[in-house]
Image 1 (cartoon, rainbow, N blue to C red):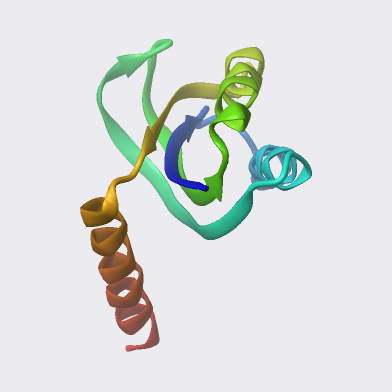
Image 2: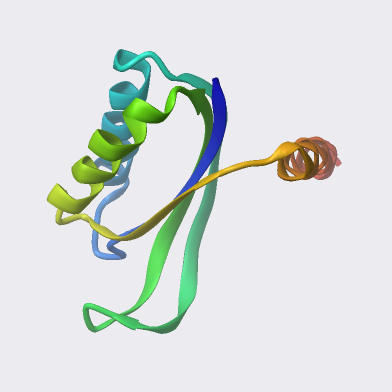
Amino acid sequence: MNHYETVFILNPVLSDVQIEETVKKFEDFLIKNGAKMVAKENWGLKKLAYPIQNKKSGFYHLFEFTSNGEVVMPYEQEFRRDERVMRFLTVKLDKHAIAWAEKRRTRNKKTAKA
């Protein structure tokens, strides 16, 4: 099983319900295809470095999951088909990146409790 991380940016004009539906759609797709979700993060509305589709901001989300490599291609195809997604990037994590991601998660949990 490989460890992957996907960051995707959703259109800023979407309502909260539409955002939740979109995130749930991609999470369900992964689970249905045998992936195991490790972490999910909602980074919220952020300003973009440059305009994408004439938009200056977007809703950022991160998925961290384990899966075999066969899931990634159809998963990314779903991102391309969905007009609510402005950008996405999926990367395979090595052992150092996995350790860093675990540290980031524990650090975020500590700051959320404080």
